[in-house]
Image (cartoon, rainbow, N blue to C red; front, side, top):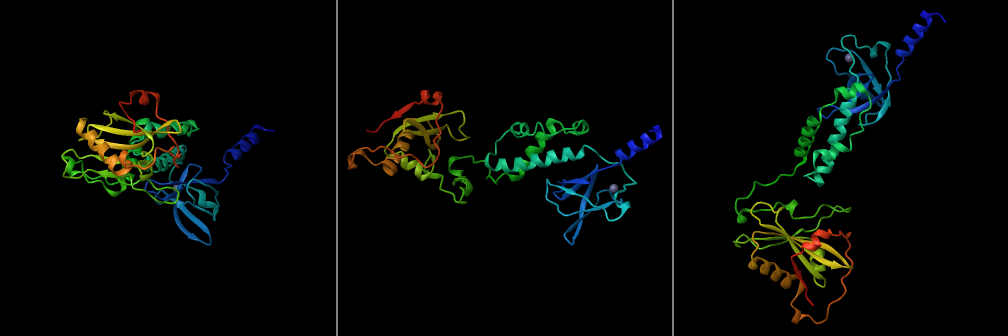
Length: 315
Ligand SMILES: [Zn+2]
């Protein structure tokens, strides 16, 4: 084969393109089609055909697909042979990978941040470490810092409306979504704030857990432990109560306590006795083996159990 023939064969191979596009999202959250280095925006839909035109102003390139689901690939068709020409501008290879990565990061962040608002950007980014394949795309990749900032921006966009930070215990007003559990599979929530000692209480305190959690305390051996480092402003400790259920120590109740004096522990335990346990002398029967709770049992760490500061046995 003559060199010129070979050259022309290579050339025709190089210009041979498989017209498979990817649908991604533009920065303005609109569907965008990417094909062979060019981006197209949605133009109109007719006869079950999605019509796209080049995003560059004045460029006449346009194409069709039979779908526009974000993240999917489609075969592209051109109505006229000149429709795939972009005479005024060059293609941008690599950009699609960057855009796709950013879109996936956004999707992951907005989903995860609703459940875990404090998730660190690096935890989200680590799952995208192997996303990028070609060198050109790597060169165009935003830095770790840019990704981190984007994640924080996406997180803010789904953050619930928290009230301003209270200055006094009596200022605290918990919005409804903070007083209930997340939705279960039936989209139902349960009360999570079980007790508020009230705005009049100078040592106002809160107790969180579900009613099932509180009722499990009744017949169980109870352990409690104060954690001081994670207490929010205005509070001295997060006081956690655990019950021994089937040989395991299960955390059931979380209290926000503004003090660590005898009175506050008495207030908490008095409320528990009066409301959830009942005084010993009023009980007609002896203790029963507690039932296994309907939620998964989380085992506390050995360290936590070792540090348990009050062992409150009621026998
Ligand atoms: Zn164009």
